[in-house]
Image 1 (cartoon, rainbow, N blue to C red):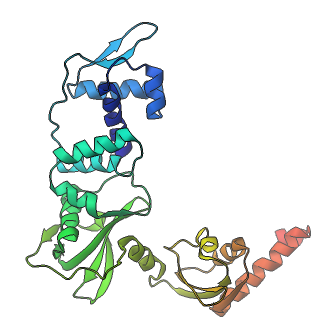
Image 2: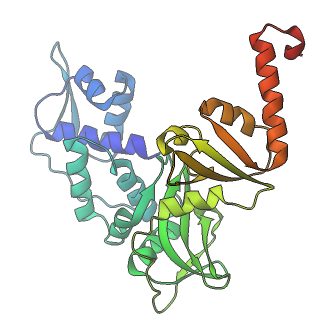
Image 3: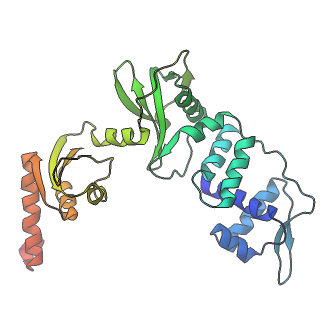
Length: 303
């Protein structure tokens, strides 16, 4: 897990500032309880960092006098976990710690830091042997072999806790995305490929791919609303929103089942027109009838 690792590093940063830090102060600064602080201190001790316990009314923890942080040696997976634990965190301590780590971590970690995009936090990093070569290939516009497939990687994206690589599949002649946990091997190939078009957004491309995947039903709507009003119920991974000259927006979705769509449309509380499919109109009308019955206290509507 990356968050505990980042907190241990933050604890070390706090102790390096000098003096005795009370248990209550450390717990508040780290956002954890006292027991967790003690566990983090033990982690530092296990790394041969001499943290002293100071007893008494104003006691707490401090680093031993004359202590200097020794060079840190990380494997690829450990380095990825540490870097991700600090990426995007606010606060001076986290930012300075990240800067220090980038100076001592392997240079190949810079590619990950420079190319990673995220739609949501990740709780766990994928295999470094897969992630790091892909990040380097994205940065250098270098083709790779994904298992048995040649691929031009455009970006690495974290979405809902899963990791993906987006890019162009020359054999299929189209853009595609693959989950990193389903890739068993990555090998850099000679040469280079043309970078994606200017303004290409790997995260946006991934979400559009989800919204337009080949599910059973194609849904087309017009809704009188703003994009901000719609995105609270129709995220980019579910729906493609197209603007018009007027107040109506065009919505395209691909879904495996229509059963849940009427409730989502009702939750928008905005005027809408169903263009396709006709059976969705029937489902929406049925939901409207049931809701009217519930509002009127009709026991038969409640089943």
